Length: 232
Ligand SMILES: Cc1cc2nc3c(=O)[nH]c(=O)nc-3n(C[C@H](O)[C@H](O)[C@H](O)COP(=O)(O)O)c2cc1C
Image 1 (tube, rainbow, N blue to C red):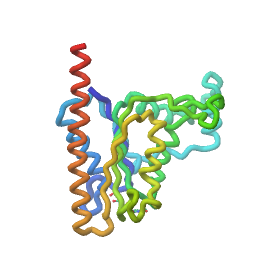
Image 2: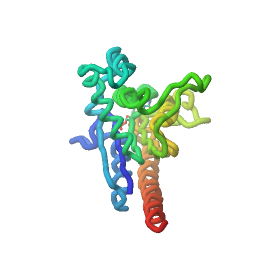
Image 3: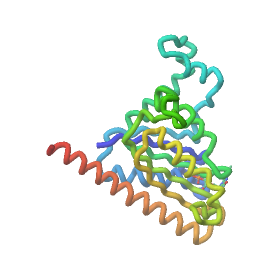
């Protein structure tokens, strides 16, 4: 069985009175979850829509609280870290992480970045030791799988395509995934939303198909793992 942490981050809703305003990234992510559910291997499902309910931005006092030893933290400092503690606990118990994101200004939405800033925290999700030389940061979590789902208005963001140098979304998510304890990452991207033409329809169709097939494959692996652990 598996615990899925699902983070959506578009400011658009999954369903609107005008369907052309529906979030594409959220709908693809929900297709993934729905396909996974059909296999019956979800233990726990944790959902956050940080696009609609964004985590607060970190502050200087927040950093001060993080760098204060746990047993010395004041009540006010504990309160400042309460949201971060909750979000980290949700991450810790998850073995599958689904993050859906729009591309805004060639990167992730500020709301999703706010979630990462609350979650990637020293002595919680990574530790820091200069004895490790030029690479002092080390993740504390491991063994997780990330499915990153994105929607873009333009196209050609994968190397060697035309806008590869402008892609600050997937490369950023790849870098950060390490600090979530991710060891396997799968990417699903729909492009061309702003062109609203047949290329967009084809890209969307492919993204939905990939979401469905990937969910079935990964859930199948989980079922197999469970079977092996029962027979071992
Ligand atoms: C504020 C804003 C900035 C955007 N910036 C980009 C961009 O830099 N590159 C791009 O390809 N599309 C851009 N888009 C288009 C979105 O990526 C596209 O509409 C996508 O489908 C949004 O995701 P959603 O459908 O899940 O809401 C932008 C849209 C908005 C609203």
